[in-house]
Amino acid sequence: MNLSLIILIVSMVFLFGFAVSIFSFIVIRRIIIRKRETKIKQIKNAIEQDVLESLTSGTEESAKEVASKYSRYPNILTTVLIDYIDTIKGRERNQLRAIFNHALREKTLKDINSWWMRKRLRATRIFIVFSSSYDSSHIIKLLRDKPAVRLAAIDSLARVPNEEAFSQIFNTFAKDPDPNLQEYMNVMYSLGQKSENLIKKYLKKPLSATKLGLLIEIIGAIPIPDLHPELLQLSDHPEMEIRTSVARALGNLKIPLPEIIQILMKLSRDKAWEVKAQALKSLGNLQSQLALDVLTGSLFSPHWYCRLNAGFALVKLGKNGIERLKQITNQKKDKYAAEMAQMVLEESIIT
Image (cartoon, rainbow, N blue to C red; front, top):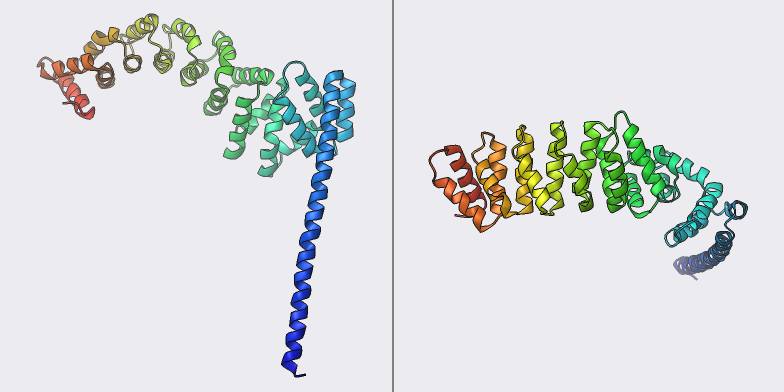
């Protein structure tokens, strides 16, 4: 037998052995994974059963027992608690929160303060879901984190009806001496209609003009039409910034009630051109024919932004507004009004 044949036979035996080893490894790995999945399923079923019994009992002692028994399976216990918190309402939520506090709170707090973003991201939802009023500082910290964590925090806040945590966030906002307005706006906006009662409550508190303005802007941004009476009450606020925010929010609500139209027309005659300009823009958003004369007259304003907003608002009023713009282009009394009307018509592709 020559050397090359021997080498070939040895190579084939080696390759066959290697293939058998790989196949055996795959088979063994699948068996291990299947056993692990079976064990996880058994543990999850056991946890679900004990959690349900704890909910029925409703005692602190039963919550401690579940926590003590399953704290060594934090990931599985987390999954079960999240599943139940999404479906259970009422006082049973407090029992779930008690289990979380005894079994997972310490680890979750450690994870959301970890240097590793992966840990912070994984811990964000469960922490916010089971947070309490005294957790607001941690939630605000998550809202200052990297974009992925911040978005997870905002998403969780929007999905979880944890009014205690919501209330504390608003309280923190009210007391914050130097608030990051964009962060607070993000979380309040994410709460949507859930924030209505809290916004209404805090509008009545002695907030700075900056904070009050943010709440007003949120009403229009969400929007929350039922809070328009609160906006109307603030329409004569001494601060120009507040009146401007009120005018913008009323336009964003897009509810052309007579009382709203009247207030916006009043604001269109405000002493501050910034308020006037915003009121005129909002009148256009509401598309009320009642504002036709006010918008027409505002094209003769000495302030460029007022003329601009009045012009585009007239376009939104349709045929009647466009006719007024054409009339203004033909008048000779005010060339600035005529030029603005012509520019608006041209930009609106109307000749």
